Length: 273
Length: 253
Ligand SMILES: Nc1ncnc2c1ncn2[C@@H]1O[C@H](COP(=O)(O)OP(=O)(O)O)[C@@H](O)[C@H]1O
Ligand SMILES: [Mg+2]
Image (cartoon, rainbow over all chains, first blue to last red; front, side, top):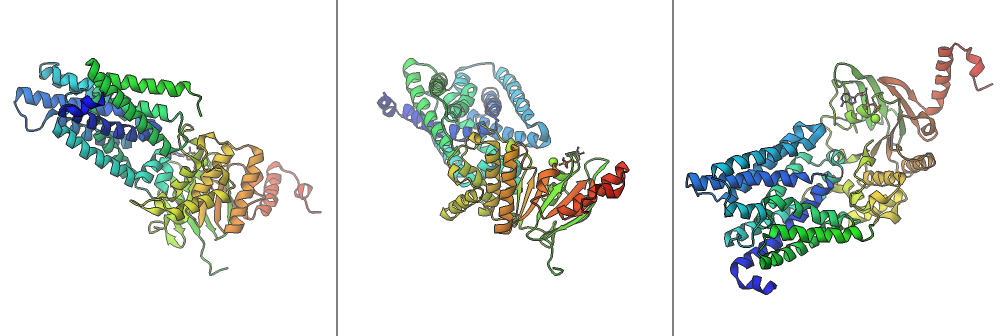
């Protein structure tokens, strides 16, 4: 079944992009889940959607195609990430309020731009639920670069990222520039989310970041093992989801999430640690 | 002794969060090698004092010197280690091993863009050994008892080989029997490794038999000296307070 994917170029792009996304989304997802920030992925994906909608609107109404809607989405997502970090520093004692703020503004802007761009069309459908056919060669190269950047950043700042995730106050006292590391992390997250949207879509991207982790932390005793298992589960689900999505002509977002839910179900019924 | 400069020196310290001062005219020195107990009731300003010493808060008035340097110019933060009052409020489901938690203590010392090497790993095992937790290195931190977790957090603070270790109410959530063992362990660290300790507690009972110096804080310092003399003094204070004649409660006759 995988052979079909390797035969056609557009499917090859989708497959390789899917594998990249199956790596970076659970990688950052592990940090997100242990920091109890699972909803941040939803917040940022909807901000990305507003950027995409804004891009589609420009494309349609002003015939401005200098920046593709997808890159516009990535730009919005990074700005959203910086705003979240800013809100978290303003609301020190209830930092989680940043997420509903950014989520609702993201949805609000999306609604406005989507209707200004004359409502739903196939492009938008692909962005919402993912698509097997939407990944061009340019997107693949771009997501490849993003993935390399994310993986290197996590490797080189691993001990700092781990420290702020486990105990932020201790990290500060031990001389880590916690603010800068938080900012780095949220920008990496924004990049991973906008990359993943190409495959799983806006509405389901948070699932690819959190479901593999929900499964892995039932088994893993160490943080490194949790990351490793999350990635394994993420990749399995992406493969199963892309192949079945292609054969049944269903957007891969749906099939990937169902695969993730199956994996999670298996770990739940297994005896816990 | 006079030419030995103290590790920590606090002078005329004043601090307020809002209108009311929570610390007033606090003044004391800590010498190298001491095991200092800082006691006071809840809300007496102990945590605030520690945060000032760690540079997390800035005083409205007064001076703090660390290792002979004014705190504003002090850079060698890895000589000081801290176990927070909130250390054991971490997320119990966090997938991290004891080894991983202790490795966090080296993060600042190793520096950016560098990795844990063999030597660091040995240090982590040594730190675990010094708190008697070497057999638990690969266990999940959330699976340990409160007392064991507290030891791991001490190991995390020891792994960077600090000269001064500050512990803010480390025994909250540890059962009485283990509290004694815990103080014993601190006493050993103090005597065998020569680490200077500042231990905060709201309970004056147990710690007086372990510490070399006692500080009693309630907004301002009410006592600074060796723990034995404190009981004499407090007996006297109590007796004047209750109006008993002094001799009736005197122990030595
Ligand atoms: N962040 C804060 N803002 C305002 N007041 C505070 C703050 N932290 C502590 N306080 C007040 O300062 C006093 C001393 O608190 P603290 O240093 O935590 O005492 P302790 O550690 O001895 O229990 C208390 O009255 C407390 O209510
Ligand atoms: Mg306190």
